[in-house]
Each structure stands twice: as structure tokens, then as C-alpha cells.
Length: 534
Image (cartoon, rainbow, N blue to C red; front, side):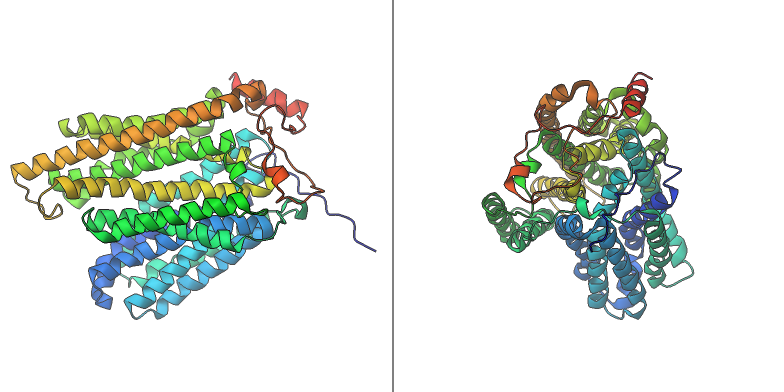
């Protein structure tokens, strides 16, 4: 006799009610934000201790970033099949084990291997943070507030990471910086194990795994991350970046062909093409591109053009840090007032406007640089939650981890491209070693020309992405009308699918009024309407 079906978990009705789960998810994001910033401070110490060459030290951070960026999508898809909480807990256990293994590291190769395993663990955990926060609640307002709270904790970690790293190094070996992850992991495991309900089996995606698509998708993302780095490091005159770019193009074409031709694709491109999904990803890509370019340019300008010390340059970045941290409490109010669709394009537009201000006026003095940093920080604070929730709203419930992985992958790839554009233009325009300092007047003018050219290119591309996303999402916004004002998405909720979730029929559902809407709860609709007019 079969056991009765288990009822799906009831959504939480407030952030306070979900405090245990949010504590665990915030701890996961805290690790992600602090991971590289803490270790970067220790790179000179690690180099001396392990007698590591500069190229090897770069792979201490790059090894983590490449593995992390390349595997997020694959693990997002796996989590939608095997269970999001299960994959998250396995990833946290792996992260804790890798952190403990750092005590036994005696060579650069061993440290790179440990960092690669940490990147693997981060790929298993980071996308699930947004997906789980989204799934804990059934109203858009609570989802935005939860994701904003988690990201605020991460921003604090990003801000204090270098300070904490420097302080610890003053009295302890560098391995302690990796051991700090262990109590953070323990807190995350407890919070998620106790506070996050187990996945409802009816909410999992049961289609067969697309191993070929997974291999092609991973290769595409790896080359998308490596090619920009090679352009920045080796310049456009080297064959290596062009070979990587060609490999990326070939892998991307093969991946698309595979996903369009197989019955059970790794990434259903029909779902990605939905207006809310593609538009949200474009907003995220535009902001990631502009933010990475600005951060790289400002760092070079403050220290090399204006001759500021590293400590003073850190102070010069404070306007951005302050807005990123202090802006958290205002995000959900802004989203409630203007609506999530408008919040997405306004915030992405703010990031692009910040880069434009810097490109046009950054050379005129620090106040213009500070203004650009504030505009970018204010936009980044909102676009992460608004665009992310929009993407997840546009997908079926059994694809939330895949959607979160797409959002994070878009941010990683475009950040790499933004830095590469700046580095490539500098290599073409600047004569000499840009990091040597003590520039001649001609070199100073060359640097400023490179700022203008690269900033203009990134501004135009980012603005184009925002404009495309606005046009792309407009029909969906108009079709949903008043129902989108703070209420759950009208995408299918798919409570218990009698058919195979991976079938093409599901992928080609319409995104407009023809889609079956979630049953609207009268109390929830009233609350959303009142919130919108506040």
C-alpha cells in the first residue's frame, strides 16, 4: 500500500517567520562575497611563503573564479532535478572540507587545487541562495525583501573583507583566512537544514540529464571567462585570446544546436526566450558590464593617474561601499512604489548613467568620480533583486535554480568582458607599462584617451542592452497589467505535473495572456494593490 502524498511546504508569511532559513542563506552569500577579497590581501604573503611566481598566484584567484563561473549553470540544472536543499548542503559540506584541507597546503599547486574545489562548492551553493529565497515566499514583495537582506549581508562581507584579512595576517598565518570559512559553513548548514523545508518531489524537474549539453555549456562558459582575461593580459596582438574567442564561438554554436535539437535539453532555450527571462538577464548583463568597467578604470585612475596610495584609493571607493550597504532598507520600498519591471530598467539605467558620467567627466576631479560611484552603487543595489526576481517569475517553479544560475553566470561573464574591454583598449593606446607609475605627460594623456574610448564602448553596449530589455519586456508588462503590481507572477505554478516536465510542450507555452495564471488570493491581491499606491 503506497504512502499518502506529502503536502507541499507552506510559504512563509514574513521575514521574521523565516529567520532561520534567511540566516543560513545569508551565511552562504557572506562566504561568496568575502572569499576572494579576504584572500587577495594575503597574496603577497602566500607568494613569499610558498615561493610562488606571479602567474601561479593569479591562478589562486582565477582557478576559483573559472570553476565557479563555469559550473553554476550545470549545478543549477542538477539542483532542479535532485533537490535544491540537498545540493546546497552537499556543496556546503564540500566547502567546509576544502577549507580544512588548507591547513595541509605546502605548495602553490595544492593551494590552487583547494581553491578550485572551493569554486566547485560555490557553484553548488551560490545560485541556490537566490532560488531558495525566492521559493520561501509566494509574494513578490517578500521575495524582493529577502533577496535584498541576503545581499546586504554579502555587501558587508565585501566591504570588511580586506580589513579583516589584513588584521588576521598581523598575528596569524594566511591559512587562517581559509579556516574562517568553517564556522560560516557550520552556521549555513544549521540554518538551511533546520529552516528551509525539503523540496516537494512534485516541484522537481524529472527529465533525463543532457550530458552532452552540459559538457558543451561548461566549455562555452569557460572559454567566455578565459578569452577576456587573455585579451586583457596578452593583448589583441597575441594568438591565444583569439584562439580562445574562436573556441568560444564554436562551442556556443554547438551548444545552441544541441539544445534546439534534443528533446530534453540542459537549458531550454524557449524558456530563456520568454520576455521576463531574457529581459532580466539583459538588465543583469548591462549592469555587470558597466560596473566591472567602472571599477577597473577608477582603481587605475586613483592610484596610477592621480598617484593616490592604495589606502587612500580605498577611501576614495567609500561612496560606493556606503551606498551598497546603507541602501538595503530602501530597495523593497522603491520596488513597491514603482513596480518591479520599472525598478529593473531604472536601476540598470542608473548603472549605465554612472559609467557615462565617469567617462565624460571623471578627469575633471574626484567629485565627478564619487557621483559616478554613487549612481552605479544605487543601481546595482536594486537591479540584483529586481532583475533576479523577474527572471525567476518568468520561469516554471521547477526551474528556479536554473534561472538563478543564469543570472549569476550572466554577471560573471559580463564582468570579465568589461575588464577585458578596458585592458584591450589600454594595451592598444598606452605606450609602456601601465602599472609602472611615474607616467610622462604623453602617457597620462594616452591613459585618459583609453578611459574615454573604453568607457564610451561599454556605455553604448550597456545602454543598448537596457534598451533592448525594455522593448523585450514591454509586451509582457502590458499583458499582465494590474496583476503584476506586487502579486506573484502569472507564469504557471505547476503544482503537480502529470506530464514530463522536460517535454517541448512545456517549453513553448505562451508568455502572454494565454498562459494559465496562478489563482489569485483575494487578500494577497488587496495587499499588493495597497502597497503599490503607498
